[in-house]
Image (cartoon, one colour):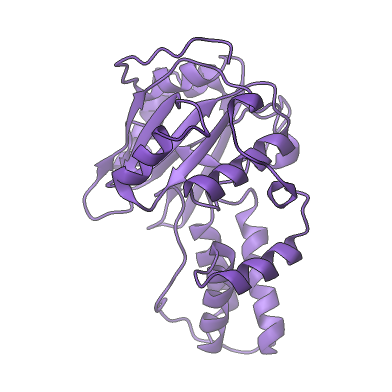
Length: 302
């Protein structure tokens, strides 16, 4: 860590939060997601513009009209138009998504000797938190290995272990509930951390290059809770078995995973095509659309 921890009662505005976490010349991804209208807008823009009064006014307008607001936590290359892993310019943050356990889960993280004091804690919805550390000197593979290890050891959401992840932007309303919940943030440290500051064992299973099939088989045999991808797969098979239109199934999965996946349309199409192949469903078969029943997809970002 290259700065002394300096907790302070600083509650930043959205613009201040952006400027404190990035350089003004950095380019970042801003995601605007309206579930009611199936609208997903991703803007790759400079930190200077994203923090400007004009851009913030546009975000407030979209938020007031039903859209959730997210920010990519690692800057992208100057010529990037997407936020794939190949587009990531540098690793500036690691994070935990605590969607189970409430305040007790957060207290456990903050008292853990395995991690340093976080820079920011966001209350993303009632009893759910996003914990953010500023870092430097990490490769993408090191960062994702650490993200996997933190999620495994500290009870974080395993879906939030990608360097391209977007988190909620504080000061904006969470639109997933009947009543708006405004995302709150508090700063706990001004430190900038390094890999050595996290006392977690990162083994081969935490590497992004680790064989996925081996992990999937091991995970499915050792636990009863399905992963998000398994939920998507099960949802697709149920919907297709009800003879729903595959295009509509793809649309719903892509919408639910917009903030999790760098290319949600490709992911959703691939999931549905695999489900169709297993069920031996022909693309040309007529289907009738029906409302989703028992949908288990977890929407991103609390």
